[in-house]
Length: 267
Ligand SMILES: C[S@@+](CC[C@H](N)C(=O)[O-])C[C@H]1O[C@@H](n2cnc3c(N)ncnc32)[C@H](O)[C@@H]1O
Image: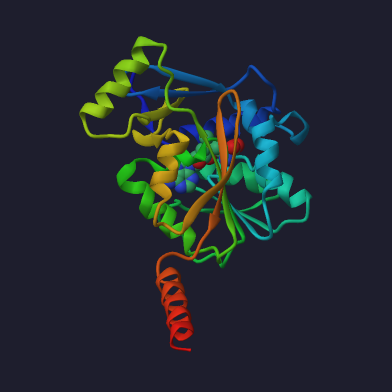
């Protein structure tokens, strides 16, 4: 029978095909199919982009990194390798066996793991979620949990640098209908349900979040991250979020202030 797709590591296979043939534009494509049938197509060579061809958003994002770096969803390692060349210790994680294989072949230390169930990899000064990988926050329900787990890896003062595609544009009927359907179903407007296809392989369907910057700020509230800086680009934006110590520090601080002022009155 024609037309049967095998469920598997479509993104990883596309990366491997491109890497094994010698990376050239126009040869291998990432096809992401949204569940209303809309297709997003990206040249896989983009994921091997050398530093001098990176756009301003990626360049800005790499410049924000500090110390030991966890590259979440590292793909072929294009950001991690730039940071390694600048002297950072970098550990990548990726769910895709094909991506892990390619990034390791390119010299990165990579562990195959999912962002929502990380093994113990030690502490990090910076978490990277680049290449629109804030999409891995999935949904309103999942985002807080993932951000809290990542916050546990980073001491106060560390940072998370992430980029996101803009929410689907308002000027196309398919995107307006998709956004409205999401809102009707109680989802965030930019929550996409997609799968990646390559040749006769497809991934399972998964959620991919494209939040506005304001929505991201709200999702981060109370998770240990505070949005401190950002940059906009033609396809999306990047943010820097600082690791802040949540909750208890502030009441203690208020008690200290109150004690000082009552001591002053008594005197
Ligand atoms: C859009 S690509 C970005 C790759 C890379 N950061 C870049 O910019 O070139 C998304 C990557 O995230 C990985 N990924 C998807 N879901 C993941 C998860 N739950 N945990 C870790 N990595 C994941 C994919 O396998 C893929 O390599």
